[in-house]
Image (cartoon, rainbow, N blue to C red; front, side, top):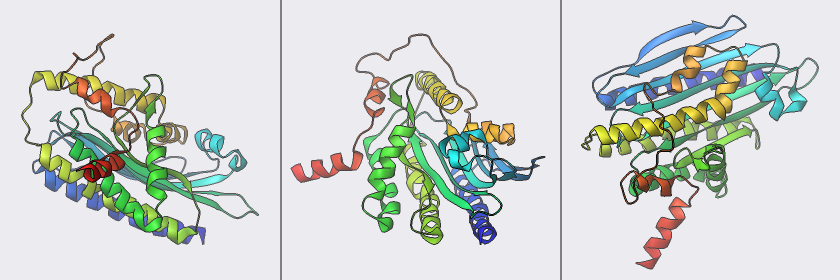
Length: 311
């Protein structure tokens, strides 16, 4: 049964990678994805797809991987100490988009499945994933659209699902050393194995399948917004925060490195350019300062509903 589950998820993820690449390349209109297949000495491999220097995307990647080994990596077993010493299979698709235009948000997502096995005991499996949005010059309507799509993807699985996974996303993508969120959130879930395999798998597919609906309309609205050196400098400065999160706090980066994954693919999520400035603060009242109000957990959809009721 475990192998059948793994095969089903793997088939879906390979198709999702294809559909994401097709949709993003079509939106870019200039550049396409180049593929790099790789093998892992300890077991498994993957196919990495990268888009660069496009009309929209300065750099982006959509990676599929299936790695397996005799011992679950420390980053996973630390969260689930009862699974230490088990063999594992981990399969997933992860993606990140770094647009050139500072008015188009960066976005990241992933969906994954892991099975931990031990002879004489039942396999333990779980799903994880989600997606989040990192604007530099945020537009409230874009943020609300993003969260409406996320809420609608969760709706068939219960009214409590979106609020729970939205809050988990806010908490997970918090740069604790900066006391700010990485962006405006979205969805994050992990260790999902409640309700049976089929229901959990359905939820993973709902999340993966909704990403383009959430992201592409925002790209289409903002891709032609004029920008100059000031906006570019601010974008590179804020990209530094993105790098900080991935290297200091991200569990996926740590799992990939500890499991002997392909470093080039794991660090694909990094932007092509970033900058750091000592003690820099945006000028009060400037467009750059407006971002500060977005870098904290907010009830985006509740705010919208209350505004509509007040009208």
